[in-house]
Amino acid sequence: MFRSLLAIVLLAMTQWVQATSLESIQRNGTIVIGVRDSSPPFSQMDPQTRALRGYDIDFALGIAKRLNVKPIFKTLESNDRLPWLKQGKADIVIAVLSRTPEREKEIDFSVGYFVTDTRILAKKGRFKSDKDLAGAYLAAVNASTGAKLLRQNFSKTKLAEFDDVPETIKALNADIVEGVVDDAPVLAMALNKLPEAQRNRYAITDFALALEVYSVGIPKNEKTLQTAINNALVDMENSGEALTIFNRWFGPASSAPIARIFKINPSRN
Image (cartoon, rainbow, N blue to C red):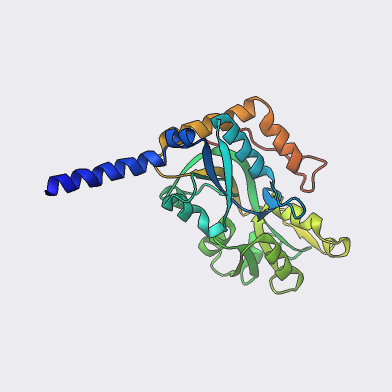
């Protein structure tokens, strides 16, 4: 009796693993992708068309195309990204997700598809070096690497966490906080969207707090899916599509112009 029950449990576990595999995704013809809807220029909801747009969205579409499946986007909050993968609510997550040693204990990652650094948006001259962070009151997005960075490396800094970037900018404009910590292109776009009178008050720091590598989040031990996504990303680089996407969102004519300091390659960025 016990052996029969054990066999049934093992069979159910095997079927559950198969249900989250690349084969299952391709058999169903769809891939569920967790994305953000309020993290421009990486992902945002167009207020008129109600369609998702952004750097992350374009890469999600490119991956789905190369896997020959239809993407199903599900919007999530920053602190949902790892739980959704672990609970099977999403097949993959493409949501400004930085690869860190702590996160690698819980999920797997693709090769990096975007590399940037973490900086501070504040009133001009407020932060000349990281020594000026001591005692400062800063804002960051919930569960972001910026928030974790401040907690772990700048213990004398006071931190306020918000649901998204627009909320952090509101807090900065209201003088509730002294600066906003996020990745450089996110801050650049937020700064460019401010009215000119406000924009002239602020600047992004010349110094960086850390280097960030954005990768696709993948459930733990899904090696075939991880390989397929890596191959798709490398193909996007080799075909020139990755550069086209970068220029669309971060090129000279974009709202957040920055230099491309990386290339996607088979070895991890």
